[in-house]
Image 1 (cartoon, helix red, strand yellow):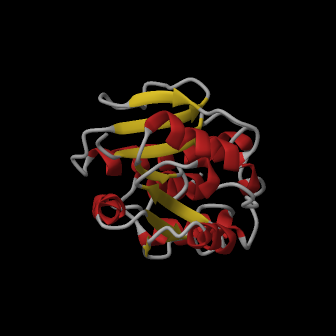
Image 2 (cartoon, helix red, strand yellow):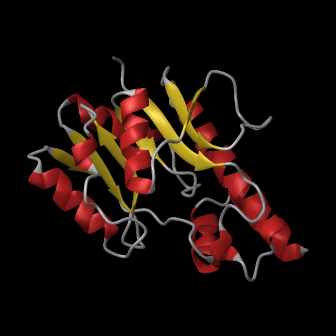
Length: 205
């Protein structure tokens, strides 16, 4: 099967996404920022030229979803199970979240290309988690026992890949948008994105 680009995301609904931005954001503002970040991520994936693009989604897709995407529902209890299920449903590929709007097509292509000679690709995040993970042969064991949403999640995930004997290519460290300080940092790193524009509009308002 041809490796895919996968994006795992939640519907940008107020009160359900990016709640750690509140305050200073209102739930509505946080949802607008989440939608902008998601649109940036989908656009970066589209610009790679990769044929198979899969949205692993919690919610109902809106008019923001570009053509050419397959959509599969998220399955499982907890993020580790949902990640394992995403690969089980979509097959081999490189998966990212919706909260690194500074992602570039080149970096996404690099994550996928790594699977041509390695078993896994791993993109660490500044907060101790990770922004991307790729698997050439999907295996739920890759996520078994990995604690999620913690400052040491990335270290545990990287150690899990190593414990399975998977040859892993490490990618550059990026900053997830987890709080308002990270939001401003991500916008500064990618000032031309929808996310940066949405944040500027919010500050101006």
